[in-house]
Amino acid sequence: MCLVRVNGLVGTLPVSEAQIKAMNIRSDANITVYVSAIRFTKRQITFSLTPTTNNDLAVGSRVQCTVVKATAHHVFCTFPKRGRLYDAAIRSSEFYWNRPTDVPCQPGDRINAVITGEEIIGKTKYTTLNACALTPNPLLTCETGDTLPCTVLGTTAGGYLMRCGGAVGFLHCSEIMWQYCDQWHGVWKRGEKVSCRILHLSPAEGGLLLGHRQTVGDPFLKHTPGVGSGYPATVRRSSDESVVVLLGDTGIEATISKADMKLFFTGVGQFIPQPGATISEVTVVRIENPGDPKRRHPFVRVTLL
Image 1 (cartoon, rainbow, N blue to C red):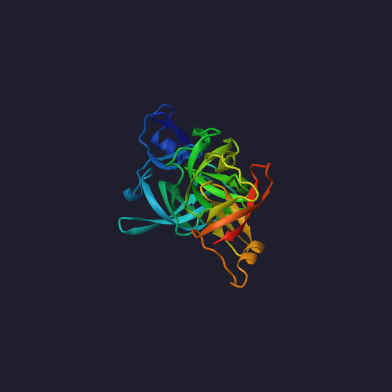
Image 2 (image 1 turned 90 degrees about the vertical axis):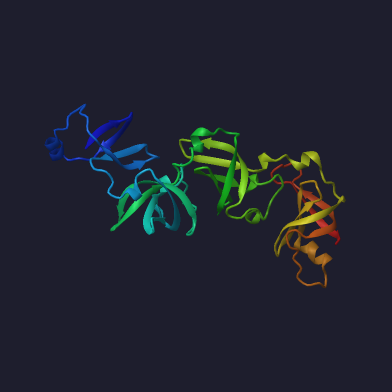
């Protein structure tokens, strides 16, 4: 094994002692080497004495791959090149700049990546890819308080997993909106674009905690609904248990409980308004946790339809 320097980059050249003696390689000797593998997250580069035999799979070239399956250590995918479908693998540590507990991807996802070399996994040879090298590391380029465009990856215990550039951040359900939200699983769908603010950033631990409500003004500071006040409402989300509505143009969400829905729709049967439906008037009956900005939430009753 030799250490070589190429244009200021230090990498390893895996050669045996016999090859070193046969080629008379000594310190400060000038030799021609070729890039054979790159580990971006580890800042490691490996050289070889011979060029890549397949120019279609040159290290450093970009490809778009399709995820086939994900394991604890690798994300297996395929990508087309000149009419042929290649098998590839992305290390979990090189899928995102920080490594979450699980790699939040699903079969069929399209990923842009960079070819970094080849690796034998089990008994199969795979082209190795890196998915985070195409984006800057937000753990190093951002600061607490910065607002980032994020993509919803899915839900986890207590919140959402969000992709922020090449890293994964966690958005707790209490940071989704200013009001208490008991149906936070249905707020966003996978793939939606959401603006989030960095609440906590720990590059050493790879931690990235996000908040969404901080990107919009607190509607309770502009308008405080009082008990007995009436508003027109638009249905935002609905389930068998409750209906969440938006109160006029206040930006405040409220809940119509299952019991209140039954009282109003007696004899109609099971009625669940769909998102986008309008209600002429609802009346505020109570506000839960009025002093807690994370949990305050009005409950309303339908008065006119």
